[in-house]
Length: 163
Ligand code: GDP
Ligand code: MG
Image (cartoon, rainbow, N blue to C red; front, side, top):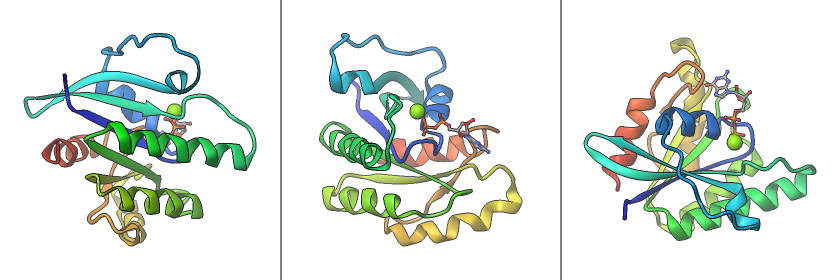
């Protein structure tokens, strides 16, 4: 079976936007199990001649800060278990948050290959917005804009290289 890339991060950073761009129309049908699988979408992608499965997480809307963080944490744990590479997505417009730091700690402990994608860098004037994300400790963050289709190739280069 194909290697797995999982996208994790807080709600609203743009995970599903990127997932949809990467899979095109290759959404995989997963058995309709209640619970966990309802909150994970699987698709397939291909880049530089490498085929992979890609997982979007956190699709179910939940209310309340505590419940949201519980879900983000659980999705990160599942990604650590099943993924070969994790795309950790953050939001350049909001900046680095406490919740990002918390997820980063979990991911650092896992020793899985991680690529930090800084989304919503919608134009080149905003590139300085990525520097604070070096503090997460995963090396060079990659500036992307899911909305404008900027940097997706660079992101996939970095992710596929670590498969
Ligand atoms: P998710 O909750 O992490 O899956 O995030 P979504 O993909 O659902 O996106 C959340 C919101 O951010 C939506 O309103 C998107 O239109 C918006 N968004 C996604 N990518 C970008 C981007 O590159 N730039 C901007 N400005 N907005 C974006
Ligand atoms: Mg989503």
